[in-house]
Length: 385
Length: 164
Image 1 (cartoon, rainbow over the protein chains, first blue to last red):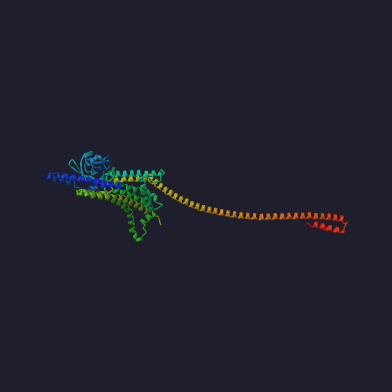
Image 2: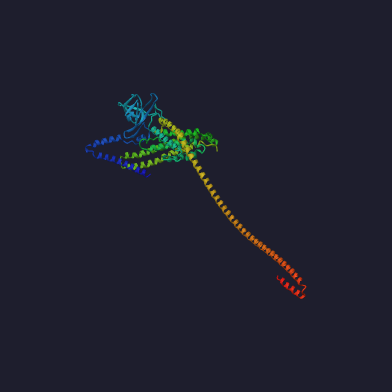
């Protein structure tokens, strides 16, 4: 624990030193300006400012959204496979490095701030140099509109099945979970009933999910069928929450704060709840135990309840994790908004505090999602009593 | 708004990945882990029950030991008491026997004395008779000589015979 604290303090000092150094360089530049160049300088400064007008919202949205390349540091990015399914032209597979960070269009597709988009209208196939800015493509002086990939709510002319930053993290987290828990199972299989190393930290959590979440909510007789799902969802959400908090490669992807993933998890909970539901549960929905005149009111409410419960699950996880990311990024942005390194210590202090809080939230949200899933499943498991 | 529209690509990938993850973990991780945890729980419960049983057995054993010890003590006391009794009896018996023997010996001695006394008496009687016969013989032989002398002689003999 002391080593950990020291590490944090050292990191903070290191970061502060960097910011201070950066600020000083900036000031030096300032003072070296000659009076005669003042006007030009001011002008260029204004232009510079206008260009680099720090758009906090765009930056944050870009950071919490998915991307088709994995930014590591500076100009260094990890290329990711792009797999596109065009309704007219079929499947296209290539590496994201072919886009040259958006400076090249490939077969009518461009990368706009890390996200693949399709150019609308007549556009040459093959690789051509373009300029892309906020959904607008400039090629040979001509301006083109772009089209985003299909989503569940807004279909378009192409689908993007690329290994994006989120998909990469998803697969990575699956591999990590498999390695950890299959290893844990192996260590037990050797006839060694006392866990060792990381397993001794994970065993209480496995028991916690089993004895504090599954059994009390679903019941001693029926919990075993649902335990694998609850355990998987708990550790999956938790690990990805933690991955999301790591500010550099291979973390930083906002997977559990992505609505597609929370939608999937909530959807699975809904499917499990209703597929394994008992007659009593359906009886409560289609024949609620209320006086007859109230039934027309209650039945729609109960039916909406089938959807609204998992819907709340989906929104809760998405909103909590995204909010954490937005908050941390906003606090860091303060430095750049105020353009003063005096803000940095305050900002970093807050970020540190928020990061610690987010570690707690990451666990808490995994727990809440699992608990509520178990609760919903348990409610649908009730028999006559 | 972009944030709130589920992306189809990620949805497909996460469906595939999550479901495979769940089935792989179910088969290769959760089942063995939960099974071994249950096994451990039951083995701990068994061990505890066994320890409790052993403890009870030991308690029973020690109480029995005590009982045995008590019994042994009692038996020892009994044996001692009996031995004492026997000893006393033997002593008493010996005493009475000795007394009896002594009495017997005394009686035998008395009898012996009596017998000897009788024998002596008989001897004496015989001797007296013999003496009388002798005296009578002598008297008879002297009778003719004198009457006074005869009487003197008889009394002389009588005085001699009156020894006893």
